[in-house]
Image (tube, rainbow, N blue to C red; front, side):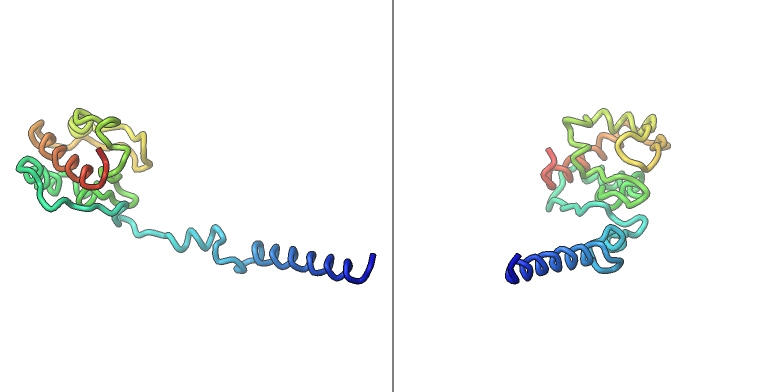
Amino acid sequence: MNSKAVTVAIAFIAVIVGAGWWLFAPGGNDQSPAAASDAVAVAQGSPMVEVQVPDTLSGQAQIGRRGFEGLCVQCHGENASGRQGIGPPLVHRIYEPSHHADAAFLLAAQNGVRAHHWNFGNMPPVEGVTRADVMAITAYVRELQRANGIN
């Protein structure tokens, strides 16, 4: 082997060793899984999604907004944005009308629902909620969904 080939081989090995050290050395790579999880730690109860609120709401959705704020906000968050570690966002593609029809909201409020999409535990029935309450709340949620591209 000539000296030029030996120099190239040594340089190649040095690059490989340096890259390995950068990737696998403790604290050497700021993108390690531990660093990434620390960077995205989120406060319990904080919103899970950003929700764009429409400029205007229908009359039924305005009534539903008041009902939502009284009955649902403590778990599902302001403007149905969800609450980290507490309850899911309803402005989410999981709850689009083709997957969860309006009747699903009524059944969930009246009977509760077993956890199946999220790890928040089961949703208990909402005490004292009426069919009219849920219809108005559903109208509010659907208008929020449409404003956020969920149809």
